[in-house]
Length: 288
Image 1 (cartoon, rainbow, N blue to C red):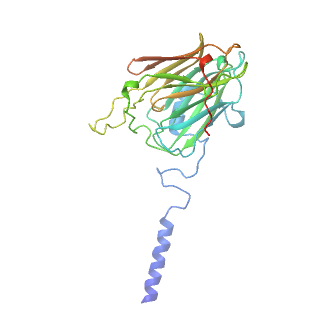
Image 2: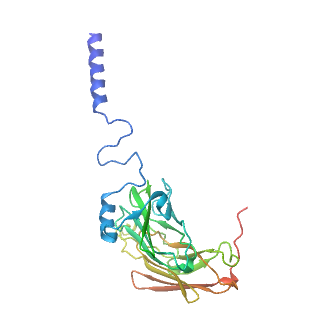
Image 3: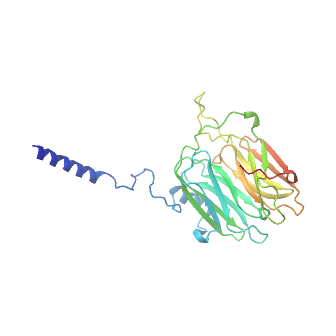
């Protein structure tokens, strides 16, 4: 009797083992276990056709753009993204447009940025909302018409439904510049940052008091100049995080003077502005 029972148990275990998915593979529709940062997706296939048609895109070692994003971000509503250009901006050769995408976000195009040679280097840093496991992609178009692509897969979710901070609504629209390293010597690019205090509401966030969805209200455009010269013009959507910020580069004048200015507008047609006299900017102290 005991032998018969043991035999039946072994048969059941063998049947269960055959029915169980193999280790390292996810069920259909489940979360991916093998990461391919360069893979496509149905959303990307559709977006690519809509935005770029059949134009070829340089990838890998041939691409002039690199995207740096953590594989596992701590918080889906604030995923750090760094875009690095592998060639400088010059008067004869420069990246003229940058498109930043999150494949599976409700609004996939996070930003489309017009660039100029005055940046010196087409490097940017910002923070994005990522709603579910997705590829983040950057495409730069150079003045010769070539397209360059890089992408990274991010394991994070919930970014578009996370409630925004409501501590200081009186500060909404305040636009600030900072130069963390001060002004660099002549001919060197100087890092700078422009930030706007704004909830960047997506329309998918739930008000915990009223249990109603918060209406969308987000930054639509950020136009940055150095004196009278345009540095970049960013058309944004709510896929950019709350209190959006853009770190960028620019080339100061020989005398180390001039005015950085930003014109900002949001989805409710509110306008904001900020400026900084770079001669007054001091390097920030390094943390001890």
